[in-house]
Image (cartoon, rainbow, N blue to C red):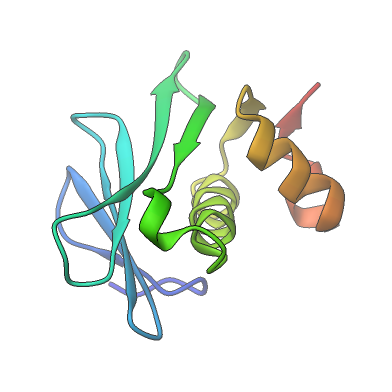
Length: 115
């Protein structure tokens, strides 16, 4: 099943987001969301479910070789799109996602943020 943001349901443990040559793969079991460009280096967004409908977006990390390509921005957008589409609330522990939200204050994102 494909959602509006480009997320594809791959089963009960994974969601995938594709954009150009980038791929965001979310593994609910390991609580990571990763992005790669066909190499072994992987950018990740760490998160944790806090209650039934709340997710804590904790940390983004992009390998040095891939910095400056807006990869963290793609991770942040995919995470926020997931939060909205799953009708969850998000706590933003990650400083980068806090920055992303300040730069992209879309009402459909803001109503899902816990302050």
